[in-house]
Amino acid sequence: MIKMLGNNVLITETQKEKTTASGIILTESIDNASKPALVLAVSTSALGKVKTGDRVFVDWPEAMPVNVEGNAAAIIDADHIKAIISEE
Image (cartoon, rainbow, N blue to C red; front, side, top):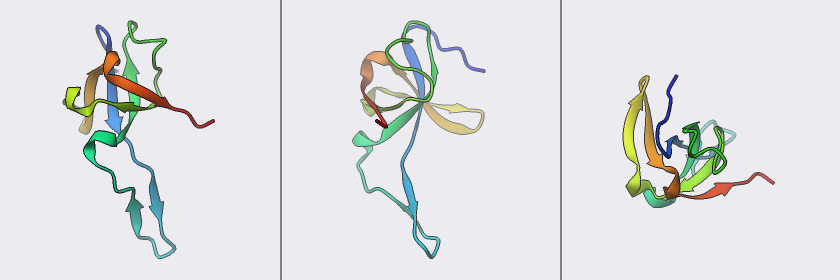
């Protein structure tokens, strides 16, 4: 379990993948700056802005890469989250 401090949010990269009928996995061709992220953990100060499970767009250069239990993730100040991606 990770407890975020300050105004920080733990995120990881997320991309929608498509699989062709023959089993080839296709990912969207996007540059690093526009990759969406998935919120994994939120500090109490950042709650209300975002919540765990939100898909968001962030200012990736402001993120600090971290390794969480063998998985790539990043810590970012909630102020560098630019938009929440809504499924509605």
